[in-house]
Length: 208
Image 1: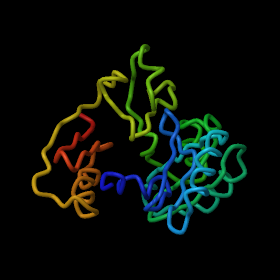
Image 2: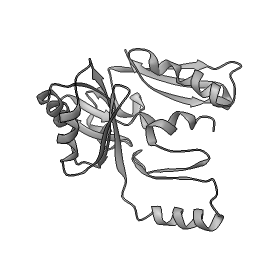
Image 3: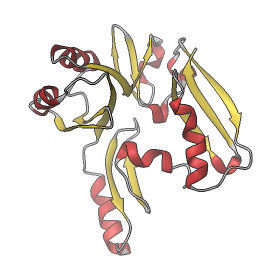
């Protein structure tokens, strides 16, 4: 905290609590800490070592299309653990490598729904050496798809992206400060923010 406020919604986590990710930013599990003994927490942490991670996908729905048939089709796919629509966005929880980004977009189009994938973020062409970079979930003919938590344009060689550093002067060190730091995400073209509120700085990754 307070940087972790920016992760709560996307990963379905609560505070105070633990959120466990794998090395590529895939969600393993989360645990709320209220009314939990130290023994319960220790047992849960040990158990996560045997759990398989899954991916949380998020896509905006363009327009006011009815996504009910798309949801039915998605829920019938192997590897899809959950599919829901909330506030104009499609949220998926899927087993790693069970569906492909272009396959999702084509399936949506066949049901009259146009999607704009937000997570994992489409970043355009990536270098060959970057195809083993942390957080690079998929690569297809259109380019790479990286989880925003680990998106570093230099590491993946994403020529279509740029990073700018900003200072966060005199912001709250709590939830309000996190909302200020997350505000650039509302700007068209911004993909992710990497925040260090106590050092009063953040890096914003956006399309050029």
